[in-house]
Length: 162
Picture (cartoon, rainbow, N blue to C red):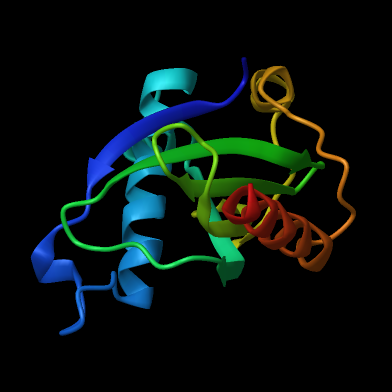
């Protein structure tokens, strides 16, 4: 399987007065999980990669859909995978679900551009990096974020009606 996941406990301090996870905290949990996944799956950290190559990835677009509330003390599963790759950009999908992956709380697509720190411009992925990232590419049957989030919303409704 090309997905990797982590389990997290939703903390009280990250919730609003009603006990729901704050919207900005969804992003924090999901992005932190992805950073962990990169180290575990790809074998490097952004810091190490930048020191070695002089390049990094800069987020140019985040799209998130909040599909179902999550509450404090709840255990969530966060899964991430690369869903698109070209010579200059990558797109990663991050899902926050229940531990059994039946209910999707949020979906996030992060588009990042490969960036040369010395020239301060976007650059093409080196051949070795493209080969590495290509090994972890997961094709999904959705052309855009709206299709994907609509599908997941429908899946949640089907599950709650079962």
